[in-house]
Length: 490
Image (cartoon, rainbow, N blue to C red; front, top):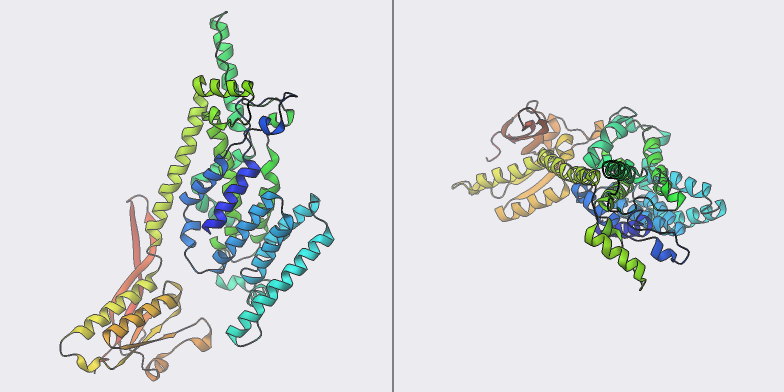
């Protein structure tokens, strides 16, 4: 993930790192390389914005197919920025076939825009899709069929479940506008306000208006007075003088269309729209780079060659450029947006650490059993097996195979043997009291405190956190109960 984000940052610099401020000219003797001065702030700000946000770094450590597909998607964006259409589309096809079938929606919106802009033809698109799809499908179907013991294409079954059978609503429903009104604002926090500045030259326009006002004011008060010439906010090129900068539109529009189409699916989760966040962060980075260039116009100039006029211009800007009041205010706002986003992410982290009561309950159970086995005179139970029943709520809130393996290792140190029985949503996979007795279950992790005859509660793990803004406290509730069979030591 880190390597993919770094590649996208470099590609963002190459694609959008063209300064629209500070001493651009349109002379016939000036080469294109010198006239279009380069800045490297877009990539740096992209990495900073991504690091300050909560969800991508937080979910990046989780074994989810969305996270596994994300590096391929981010690499695809980098190739897209560099103009390598064939490789960009191939990576999206592989990500959709192997890891997340919903990448097909993103592939559709991006591919359609590429066709409309004539970046590729329909035959080329078919060749790329069929070739990449056959290779990816052959790899994933072969490998997964061996693991599952039957011929299976996992993402094909997910696609069939969500589209043909339309059963995604069984996992919960959200309103159609949830991604736009809840998910994206929560994911981007204050950095969302920087996105419109990627296609609206508002900072340049406001600073230019201030210079015009200051010049008229000084000329009115002193007839002979002259205001130091500020750096050019808008270049002489008429296309670059427009208030709207459409360079990011060709990348932003397909991604926003992906989010819009995904909104028709009843079941919605934040992780489903992770592929949209890197492009939105690039847009926010472009907006922040515009603010930076108005605050530090000289830093946007990189002179190559030995053109004395260019060197004199750069030296003059670095020595005595005047920063406008609006540029300072906008830069302060951009800095506060990053700061508040970081603070919000820290608050999210404090809340989210209580989101896994099942995993915490398993750790508490290991400590409890260790204390029981360590008591003097309890040597009779060292040879007994410890069988733990885990219900659905516990499994979904942190009881993973990693936790079970850790508990088994701890059991070896105790001189005992652990085994686990997990319940499921399906009726045939749910346990009743008779099954608990027949399978010799000694302990249970369940969201229910009662209903287990012959068991008593030995501990409880708190979860379901919520932030009380008024009291500035994080409240939790009893979520997972640890139950022990009566007389299991005998």
